[in-house]
Picture 1: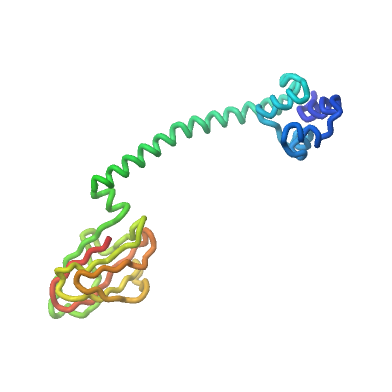
Picture 2: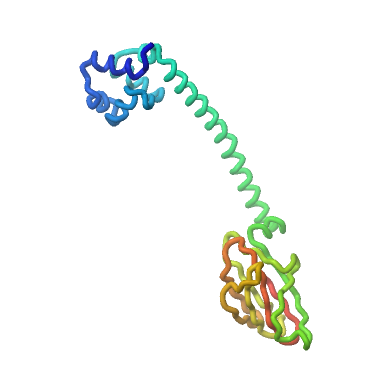
Length: 215
């Protein structure tokens, strides 16, 4: 039983062609011809048709008694059909989900906005005994904050707050994330945290009422 490589080499010799000459007619490298002839790889169906044209032999004769190659090409064709089918399904579904998500964001759906761009709010009433002591801010969703996916998280001291606040960011283990800073009423600042990073906001405040927003 002959192989495809043996068939190809025999027909090439019959036409008095070197590997380089055959490769030039097919616009491919000589190493591709060499790989086919020694059985390291096989041409695809389009290249088989080109080979049959250049060598003036039918595709059936080229692959005659080469069951390994036939099985390989058949398997590759089957896999290609599966990949194309999967892409035909995945691409429209991905597009539909993207449009739907954009629509929800546009409609200001709270759950979607909290995922892509979380918005946290906290109101604090600081009494005399609590003044000027580092305190963890407890937001409407707890003390932990998660950074936004698409942009830098921002902390705002609401204009209605009594005074400026001193702010320090820490990770979930209490380790400081950069230096502390101050925010006057109505002032905001972008936070030096990574996308989706979880952190806590600690504040030191004079006596009074405060509103803080993190988004």
